[in-house]
Image 1 (tube, rainbow over the protein chains, first blue to last red):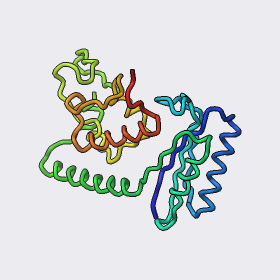
Image 2: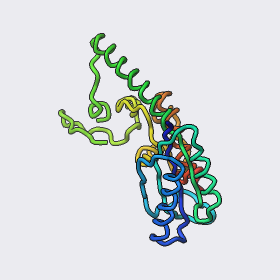
Image 3: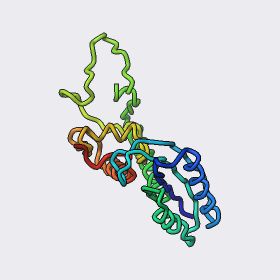
Image 4: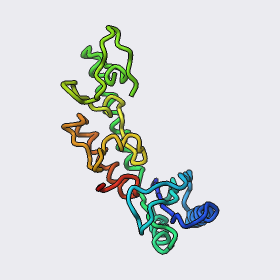
Length: 131
Length: 87
C-alpha cells in the first residue's frame, strides 16, 4: 500500500457549489479506481502565493489516499487534473516513505534521550529553551 | 512562543536571535521527525520577506531539520502556498 496526499486548486471562477461538485467527482474517480480515501480536506477559497494562470485565488482541496502500488490511480487522477480546465494546479506527494523515515528518526531521538539520561545530562523542557 | 515570567524580574530580550543569545534548533527541542509542507505557521517563520529560505547560520536550525524544512518549503511553493520570490 502506498499513501499519497494529492492536493489540487480549482479555479476561482467556480461557485462554491460547483467547487463542491468538482471535489465530489474526483472522490468518485478515486473510489472507482480502487483507492481508499482516508480523508478529504476542503480548505475553501484561499489566496495564492503567486498568480497561477492569471488567478490569484483558488479552492484548495486535499485528498489523503491509500492505494495499492499496482494501481495507477495517481497517474489517472493527475491526467484528469491536467485535462480539466477548472483545475489550475495540482500536486501529489507520497507520504508513506516519509512516515517511515520519521519513525526511524523518532527511534534515534529516543536512543539519544536514553544516552543523555545515562550520562546524567538533564534535558531541558521546550518552554525553558525557548523562553 | 510563550515566554515564562523571569524569576529575577529582569526584562528578557524580545528578539529571538538578536544579540548574543545562543541559538538552538527549534525542531530539535520539539523533537520533530517530520516537517509538514502544509504547516504555514512554521514555514512562514523561516521565509522572510523576499520568500527565500532563512539560512541556518541565522536561524540556528540543525542540518537534519534544515533539510526537512527546505523540502517542506519547496513543496509549499509548488502548490502556491509560499511564493518563489516576492518583488
